[in-house]
Image (cartoon, rainbow, N blue to C red; front, top):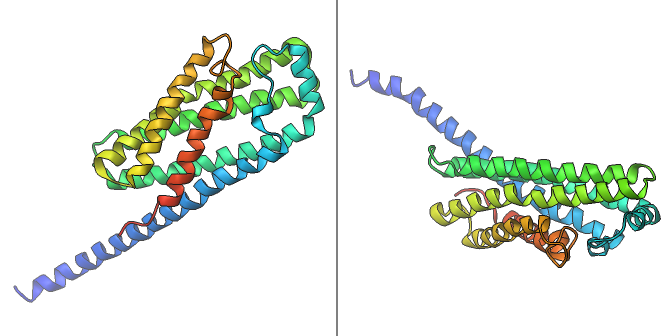
Length: 242
């Protein structure tokens, strides 16, 4: 009987080793994918800044006629920035999927945090791309004053609403890192600050003016900059598991 057991257990042992090797390669690939897509997801949109700085977009209460003239006068530059921003958000999808893989593999199977993170990323990207679509329609052809104002407000409104799923994703990520140490704690610190900031974007729908109004500087670029900071920093810290 003793001679039989090694013959029976050896294939099983080899199967476990093969499965473990595949898992390690999969995790290494996910880490590399997160690093590259996260880094490019920050660099590509950053290229748009010198083309047309986002802080120069029309402020709250700009008339529809002025928005229409602005879109026409800067049409080509705005189209170029939209292409870069859209590519960047597309990279965020892959970055989020790679991070979700890391969370799912490192957290307990019953933990809701990986699912919460992934659903938050999906909701965030969906609303951001919807906002981009509204802005693309503004640029697609010359518009009247009323339609220009509507499309511009819709763009910023959808982008502001993306703050809620963004906060969910970042909050789940921060809790996962604090509790299970799946990545450096610094990534959780930035995620927590960014999550709190993105909740504040809801003020944009009730603030008639000021930095947190619909087209205010905090809403348009300052708070979103926290998300870029988290993506860039997290991408640099993701490493294959030992």
